[in-house]
Every structure is written in C-alpha cells, then in structure tokens.
Length: 635
Image 1 (cartoon, one colour):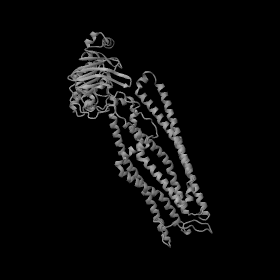
Image 2 (cartoon, rainbow, N blue to C red):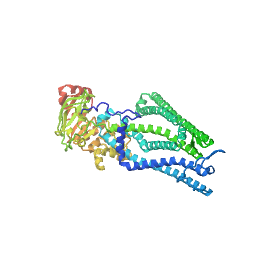
Image 3 (cartoon, rainbow, N blue to C red):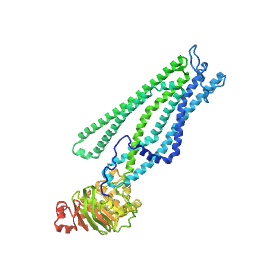
Image 4 (cartoon, helix red, strand yellow):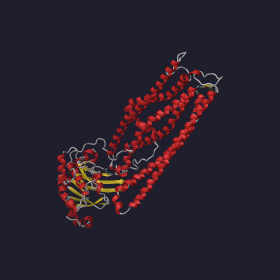
C-alpha cells in the first residue's frame, strides 16, 4: 500500500439523521447484550410504572362513583332521570351489598392509600429505571470509548494527515455525548411515553368507545403541530451547531495566533470577524429557541382544548340522563377520562423531542462505527514475526513512495547504511527527506521496492517490535502535560528516576531542569508551555536517549536550537549516536561534516552521495547547496 490514505477516508458529514439505522442498531445491541438482565429489569419497571400511571385516574374515578356520590348509585342525575348503572366492584373499590357510612369511609380511605402507594411506587420505579439505565449505559459507553481510543492509536499517520484532530476528537466527545443521552435517558423515556400513549388509548376506547374517540379529537392536531414545529426546530438547531463550530474555530485560531495578530495590528479585524460569527450564532440560537418555545404553548393550548372537549361532552351526557349516544356515563368516568387526557397529552411533545435525540444518537453511532471501521494503511501482515535485536544495517532497495496516486515523493531510491554509521540527509525543502526517514520505522509503506533492516523486510516484522528499537527526534517537538521526569521517561516507561536523570545529563539538559520551580517534578503546560523551544528540544532528545535505540532518526532535531545551544548538545548527540545507525536530516554544517555518508536528495531522487569533502570536490548539486545554505555557518 502506498503512502496515501485512500480516497475520502472517514470524514463523515455532521448530520443529525442516521443513514444505516438497522446495521447501526445491530452493532449497538452487541455492546448492550452483556447487560441483558439489567435491561430486562428496566423493561419490567417501565411496564409496571406505566400501569401505575394508567391506574391512578381509574382510582380517582372509582372514588367519585363509589364513595363520594354514593347517593346516586355511582352517577349524577337530574330530577326524573334514571341512575347510571354502577361500575363493577374491583380490588381497589369494593363495597359490600348493603354498605354503611363506615364502609364508604373505609373504602375511600383505602383507595386514597392505594393512590398514594401507586404514586410513590411509580416515582421509585422511575428513579430505579434511570439508575439502572445509567449504570448499564455508562459501561456500554466506556467499552466503546476504550475501543475507539485503542483504534485511533492504531490508525496510520496518513489518516491524521487527511483528517483534522478536531474531527477525530468529536467522535469521542460530541458523538459519544449524544449516544450517552439516548442510552441513559431518551430511549427509556421514549419507550415509556409510547407505551403510556398506547395503554391510555386502549383504556379510553375500551371503557367507552364513543367518549374515547371524542376525548382524542385533538390528538391528530397535536401530532401535526409537533412534527411541523419540531422539524423546523431541528433544522434551526443544526444551524446552531454549525455556527458554534465557526465561533470555536475562530476563537482557537485567534488565541493560537495572538502573537501574529498583535504583531500585524489585526486585533480590530479579528474582533470584528468574531463579532460577526458570534452574532450569527446568536441569531441561530434565538430562532431555534423560538421554535422550541412555540411548541409548548401550542401543545398546552390544544391540551386545554382536549380537557374542555372531555368536560363539555361528559357534562352534557350527565345532564341528559347519563347517556352519550346510547352509552351509559358516570361522573367518575368523566373524571377518569380527564385524568387520561392530561396524561395522554404529556408524552406527545416528549416523544418528538426524544425521538430527535435518538436519531442524532444513531447518527453519532454511525460516525463512531465509521471511524472504528477505518482500516489502517499500516498493519502487521499475517504471520509477521517480532523483529530480532537490531544490529543496525539499513538498506533501501529501489524504493518508490507517494502520498497521492501519480504524484511520486521518492523515486528509485537506493542506499545502504552499515551498523554504527551516521547518514546525513540533505536537500531543498520538499525534496523527500522526511519521507525517506519515515519509511524506516514503517510509518508509511513503499509503493515499490523494499526497506530492509539486517536483511529483514520491515513489512515482515511486527510494527511494535520494529519501532521499539528505533529512536525518533522530530523538528516539531511534542511534550505532554506532565512532569519533566515523565516526559523523558516516555521513551522507556520502566526506566528508573536515576536513569531518566542520567539521560538528561547525557544531553546536557539537567542544568535548566534543576532551575525549574520543582525541578524534574515540574509539570509542563500544553505542548511543553513553560519551556523555551530549545529546552523542549533537549527534553525530546533526552527522551530518545533513554530509549537506547539501535537506530536513531533525527529529523532536523536541532533546527529550533540556537547556535550556542547546538554546540553544547552536539557532543552529547555524538555520544548518543555512537554505536548506533543514525539518520540525520540536517541543516547544520557541523552535523554534515561528522557524517559517514551524506545523501543528497532533490525532487525525490538521490542525486549525489559521499562524504562532505568528496561532495564538495565534485562541485555538483551539493556544492551549490553548500554555497547557498551552509557556507556561512560556524564550523
């Protein structure tokens, strides 16, 4: 496989709607399966709590019919009207054949206690549902996060060259947040809300079909209003996500480049640009909140209309002889239906909002799985063996390499480095120097030819065993937000404190380390903030030294170090490189003069090689490069 990462990679669109719902849900189920017992208990609690919510209005209706208006045998009637047929005895509203006042009081008291018990039980079951789903959901999310983090570390460098770090990070942050909300809260609430709607509808229609249909007259209008307004709100909130991304991007860029902004007097221009993006975000949020704010009053108004319809229809039926289109009515039934309607209206808006969250969560899961499905360009081939202890002979045999098809970076490159030799690689910017160095630890694969270490093709060895014996110091030093001690120890985690300090002394970094506030225990800021560029480079070199690699790659490792500091660490670098095969991408004459072989690259090809003096004597490409870049440097 060549250096390029393939067309497109995984740069997924930021969409709130899923595309492959079925496949994504099946993969999510695989993560949830280990917690099936907990989910089964949650399902039972959902059914039980829904039953409690449906039963409470029925209890209130029974209280009215059997205990509060017993004089009319369970119904209200005008003079001359027949009484409604009494509702059958139930476990929660039982009366003896000839009840006394004490029986009514006792029955009403028991029913009130039953209502209180159902209310408390429903609340406890809701809390337990939330706890159990959070318990299981957090473990599912932890497993996905760990798998995602592991996979990110296995991806090839070509992937990160094509995808911004923010895009990758959003998979672990934004997408995981939406998934967490759905698993912990939205999913259960949507299921319980849907079950409540179906159950209440069934109860109303089974208790009194005509009255039930009248009671649900406003439901189609509520659903239509919810779909219309929530759809527009979803589009508006999508705009807010885009606009806040622009705000964050501008803010990060301005903070990172504050020195350049001040140097060129661009403060006012940046402030104006930020003001514009911030205003766009404000307008987007106001629009989105406006739609959201309109939905609740609209549903409340229609909910009140539903209550009015139930009240009017029930009242008219009671006044006309407890009869509605030939169906017997009672005051308790009217009150029961009022409770049903109130509970029926609540889940409609809730389900719409939660359904949007669930859609976003499934879309986020698609993006997460899309990243997990990204195949690294660099993988251990079947049967790859650990690299034996490296002696240090490196051979590039007619190597071609490219990042994009048809655009070669290296062409027919061949060279041999014997154990212990120092190879300097020089050439103009963009000639392919860093690419050549990256082929040795197999950060990229060659398109043609082979790279062999001690006669073993690097593709035949496991990447971990290969890279574990190669030290690397880059031009752009990266230090972690940790102590100086641990930043150096990063090169060999099992190293003792004394070994870390010995490595720092080797590269003459201990002097400035001891002057830090807590010495080796000083915690550095992001990217090594608190140290100068030269000091950061010295720590990086110490990190390579403690790894004790057999092959050492220095990619312009002293480019950010001033001449005096370079002279101070040059002897340390020579001691570090002694006995090791070293590849030095060089820009300093002192490094080149000490090299056993100087490789001159131009436009991806080796145009010359030899010692410094041999190449000068040729008076060719290197001679010209020396006159233009190196001659003025102190030796």
